[in-house]
Length: 471
Image (cartoon, rainbow, N blue to C red):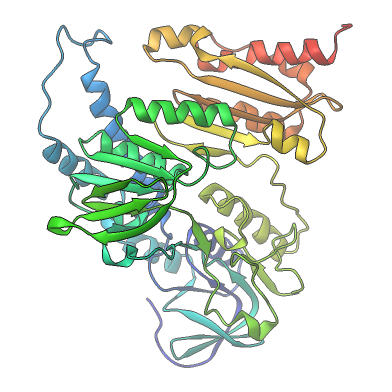
């Protein structure tokens, strides 16, 4: 039962934020016998299950299924192309499935679960009022250890007129019930690319605007270029190296967006997906002498303890380190082990990154440019997935795998790929980078035929031949 009294209670640990990291930390510590209070102003479980990861993947799968249905004859699944229903009707069906997977954005079961584990769930916004004390909307909680897991919030750029036109954040887009006739997506990162593809495959006219020279920020350039080509093939108007300068309300309430190249794009709605900022403002951390970084992040040591603090910890997006759900879960494990008396350090060299478009993009570690920036004598090898037998049987256009190795140590330091389900078969590269598996051992790995995993064999063998020419 959620507690709302104003009596000062003392807990071994108070966790601010019940997202992926906070929920896990609270549950494990309570099961270990610690008294734990979990403070959350919105939903237990955070954004991922309700308005981010899970609903977006649900919509992507529905969009993929619709696209595949249009190719059913080409794939031999029918003698003629089947007729599909109206885009609006199909989008509504996808939304129903999305909301079922997202549990109708209702955290009742998750909230009951943490309470059943012995966690005291306190609803409201917590703020540090002094050493060892948190105020949650009038109720004071005492703590011996404080964990900050408040996640991140969408960045809202300061663009003239943007606040006067119909806009969505990604959270709002993944909660919306209706399909817009047209959409401008601001931002060519993972979220922007995914939601652009979802909407175009349900008949929405989509323009994607990215201020940088390529999609996906600093990901491997050739992979990003291939993704841009695939999105354009889907019908998305991808505009790179162009900024949104101002916006205004047009006829019938549409958004008119003026770009830095002198053009104007009109759409029913603008999806703002230009990044997220760690949520640290208003937490009262200055009372503990904690100052957030330039982007709002909390600097932590390898044990996930906030730097300069003996009893304050942080995990998840709020640390600004590889802001993904799987990173938050990893940091939660590190933090809990250390709070329970261990001494475990986090290693972020092999945190995987994925974009769940079709085809998927997956990467880990460093590309050649980033490796050289770190002083690594990097060497790369490339594999065209059209040369993999599975590509032919799957009936797709292939893709690319790029491996980056450290010449001196003879190990992979990074990998990037675009191709069908690359987010799954790239786990091999994640293990290779994290465990520093010698290239000579990787070259001796046998993959099942026919699989996309076979794509690793030629470039690994090429790297071995280049690094060890006399053997």
